[in-house]
Length: 384
Image (cartoon, rainbow, N blue to C red; front, side, top):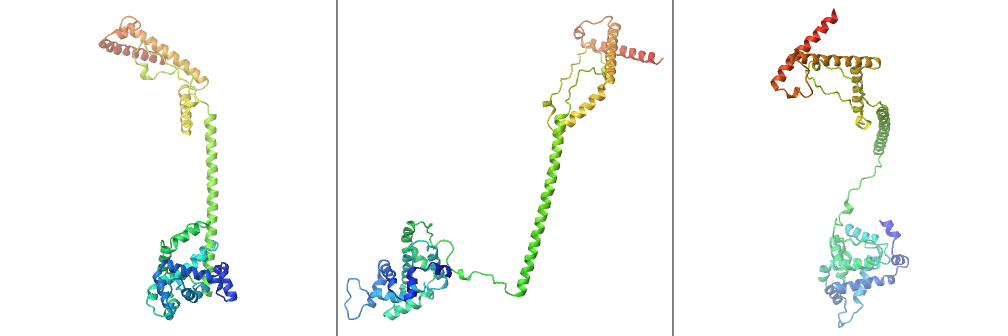
């Protein structure tokens, strides 16, 4: 902070250090007097009454006595930028206000006199008790170290903040923040600052800790690299499997079941229904109906296998179809012969539905017995 202050030191203070004159600070002294006259007229009049010569009649117009007194007391404040006169916390507050506004041209010409006037107003109770000039000098030289940051902030916010805002608003500076809000400007110098490790054993411990941390970081990076490689390998396998599934899905032979004559089951062989319905051919299954997932592909393959087992392949399929046709013709012949034997004639179309329920049940049982007898006779004759 001090180095920054040296870089941004006002030109007026630079001239003071070079020639040790007070002429350059004349505008600041006058601003302090104006602030006291406008803000706290009682303290200004009290100072004027003490400083006025005892044998002279006090005039109603302005006189130079207060200004001369302020030059004597405030010169050290301005020259050393309040160092040695304010405690650490309020001093840091003042310096911070100066540094954060150092980019605003000539703003220090308003800030520093306002700080000095705020210090005098803060000590007004002590000044009002003074009866002599020396007592006022003692207060302004030795009592300023009892001023706390909160007091300075309150006076600045009450009497100077509005003017500061207007002054800053005319520049490109950021927003003005009320110093009494947020964290208080106290005990900053008491914040814990870790001590530098200058002892050999401490440096050795720090070096070992740093090496251990570096080793852990290196291991962590290696583990991350291995994990990334493993993830890439797994992703490659997943992509390969997905491609194989897609290839199987789009190259598999669609199920197009041709019309084939299905062999009757044993139960159907003994169903006495002379007007059995014709077997309708299965509709071919399109690719959209096959599905687009591996599960559908698996089911399609199972269906193809069952179709081959049930209907055969190649010559076996032709032989099986011929045998099935022959069984159907024999079964129809058995039904016709059963009708003639039981009813005495062949029934016409829809004549079976015109029979009563009792007649249908009686004829069905009798015709079933006749069909069984004919099948048994053919089986017996075939074995002879």
